[in-house]
Length: 317
Ligand code: UDP
Image 1 (cartoon, rainbow, N blue to C red):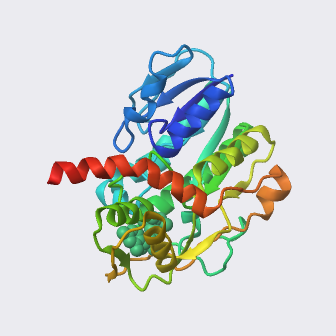
Image 2: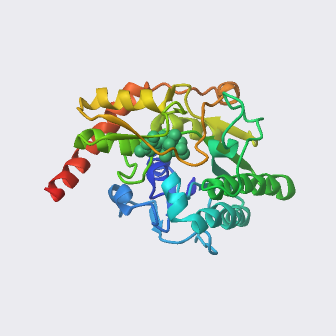
């Protein structure tokens, strides 16, 4: 098997690359490194069967040799990135998806789109089943990501129906673990960094909005099962461990043994109030459900961040 992973220098993409490599795949990673880092792939450099191409998939892409599977995982994914890179986010979801589908078609490869619970927007139903059509503000600050991913799903299904391409769509919910960027602005690295530095933990808004946090290794087990299935409609992959952001902050304080105070800052615009996947489809079609507790996943993630935070603390002193 020879797989292409776009976004393979990012948090989830690099873990997927490792997993495919461990399963015996050759892997070609394509990444433009606007948010990814080759540090996440350093351990694979020079290994036979691994190849890195620094390309922007929003431009025409070419890959030499046969390809069996294209995993399109490239996109900035933090709400802060949506402000920093709005056009790139739109382009990688729209043009990038089109190019990756074209690559899969040219190589007669299978294809998987990394989509997101953001397609549900600020959902009016909870938990969210795949049949829910969503509640998205197209012109809000998150619209660049939400609409790009909705378009990407449409394009993927069009290639499936019109060209007969063998496609999959995974909708990820909040996923965390080692290799997240310390400064990507998302709640997991932010709270862990603040807690380890003894700084105030900043909750945006009242903190009663909820998220369900899935550990990357569980999430990728679901991805591999979906890749091996014949299922073409979207599948939610996440966890049922729903927490308010306030409860999550308290959990981080406890897990780090921090003395940080929890404070409230201005609410984020269009911040979804509740997010929890309905996992019935993943359970019944893939026989998959997550197994890592939030406490265990957080312990491993905190361990990863400790030396990184110590390094910035040292640089600042
Ligand atoms: N959040 C927060 N403080 C932070 C970062 C995020 O309270 O320093 C909140 C944010 O408003 C949202 C939730 O945590 O309600 C998750 O935010 P994140 O940026 O991780 O991703 P999202 O799930 O919104 O895409």
